[in-house]
Length: 552
Image (cartoon, rainbow, N blue to C red; front, side):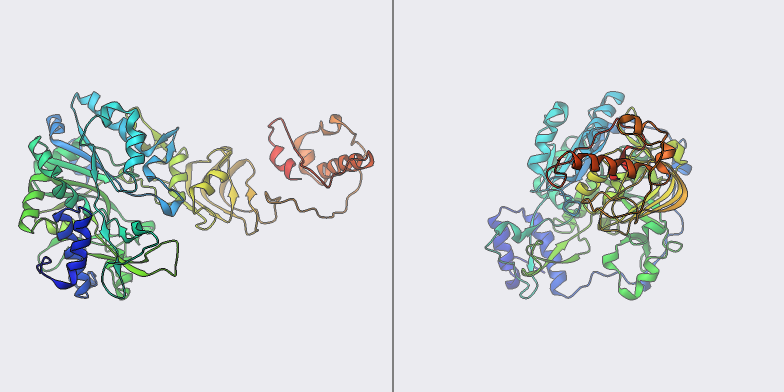
């Protein structure tokens, strides 16, 4: 369909051109828009696909089986997707600027990885970021401390923006309160359009760059791997997707499949699955592989494809139903038209996939992921690559934090002010309710910690081995709530610090400490001190029982 002459698209065409949007981006958006107008669901039916039974494995079939060619490093660009703000985790800046390990943000480690590899192989490896209009300024400011990175004038590829579509009229939504909210990012499938429309694809090709390795900025496991680069070059294919074997935790993520009509590899996302097909979609024994979003692309063949399609890659459209102001549920309902870059696998005849270890897939989508990376289950090696601790024997622990109590990064920061727990020997940690942790919590095997109360609870120091701990009735960390208990005097208890010089075991039994504290308050009151007003400051010498004693 010719969008230049179509009457229904005219308002979009005018709006996008007035903002200086490239013709390639307009063409890509028009393709998605007319998919919407035609009523296309974008679904991939179960009857149209088959399972992928086996794939080459990086560890088994590639490493040590082919000749590594370091000269290829001068022909590759490493590109990180950096358009996300991380708003779902309470951030108002690029998620890549979030501190993740040893004082380093995601972007610190990525920059250090590139610099380290350049030094190791004595090759000026090309590095780029695809920023959005929301992340560009903060990201470039942050990178100013890495002169060898930021001095490249082509470091940034700017993601396009597209109009939100009014659900009722299917025209561009109008929102005079904040015109900025009339626009949205088009998803990371915009990568190809942004490269082509900005002229940077031609620039890269003119510099002799033939291969592109692209991954998410929050996936520190996705590093430039020479074995994979050599394999991609040797296979001489247009597109290669890194996949991992699905587990129960991955059943809701997109999976790889074969299109029955031509045996082409395709990616089916959850948004492309009809309700009736969900049991098949989530069958990890049938559909064994999921997309890590680590992709390898032949740039010359990408250009050929885009020219043949009119300047864009015809990716499946993902319809996201939102409101124009995401903070106001009563604002105008809209469609946000998005695409996923991994879906391009269906557009390249001869595209391939390779199974990689889980260590190459360590993204942070919620606070459970962030706690795992901050724990001792992951280490940073001398090349600034985040690696699974060898003690984990190749299997990362599963962390399942309460989604309501640990929704935002700020919640996790408060709950881990005492440090991060040890997870290196843990199989699965589940936390229900608001629980504060520390570096002196050691989890082994399967551990469940429960707090059904309305206030946060501190998990006492110690080793927790294949157990369930219920803190619901433990002393809380909320406002003080006095209560009456019956007690009797202890004959050996004396006033002053001598009354406290007892073994911890004594304080843990009965009401010994309770008696001492109440006696102190009684003495203060008898001396005329008003203990009902003002602030109470409690100090200690940092010993084991301090945190429990403070609650008493």
